[in-house]
View (cartoon, rainbow, N blue to C red):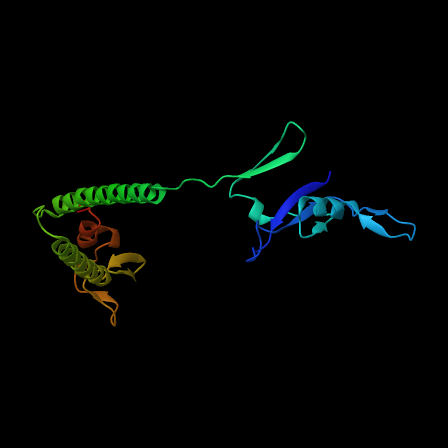
Length: 215
């Protein structure tokens, strides 16, 4: 079904009303013979002349003229079957301020939650370290670094002891090198051989302080 639209043209100084062009789409051009000399004329052009249009444009495709629409398109069918297109621009007054206020409120809540979590973690750390809760994070970090260095030093010392009390095979038995005063070149012991599993030093390092029946 053909659609009729108006395309307004720039107004000239001598125009008593805005000039316009009649636009017809979804319709094939229709020409009729009007004279014995086979002259013809388009009936859409006749309509344009009657309504005072500067011309007529006929298209078989759908042509939408942006100037005839408003922003938000709502299409509905009128009682006579014609399609009515309305575009409504939303009123965004105050929308930006509302969004910014909500964003600031959310950011404030996040900062408060993070601050509360940090306070809880700080209190737990100072209690574990035996420190005053009023200490700052630098003091806590320095205390933890000191504990780490002390642990590393003790672990290295324990490893040196373990290397000193290493196992060695002597006359078909595994004995402790240090406790037996083992002489590697002569493959002899200056003290009574001590079985490796009975080494008191290693047992103490392993947390076993009970004495075996053999001792």
